[in-house]
Length: 128
Image (tube, rainbow, N blue to C red; front, top):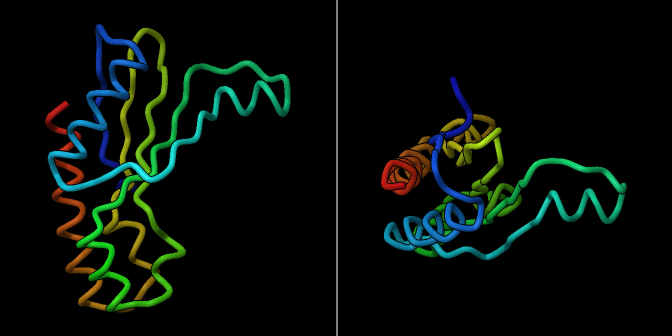
């Protein structure tokens, strides 16, 4: 089982892909709560060069609320991370597959919510 939902974007920049990804997530009811510039952090902390790499923490409040009601500790696995990374001249966009990440939790109702969230993330990624 793959643990991410992926799409390769060609003929775009990391900045353009970031904008498009945020818009696609918004269309599916997600907001971006966190943003980590991994490339910038690695340069600052380790003086290490690496290709562009962003981690967006995306959350659909309605779905997060449902999940927390079913499994209060699930917040340790939230929000849903979406990465945008430079891969040669392309940008690879990868969202966590919530179904894969929730396999550690034995709660059938939570697995159902994870499936719904997966479908929403897949629609957002497909729209790019």
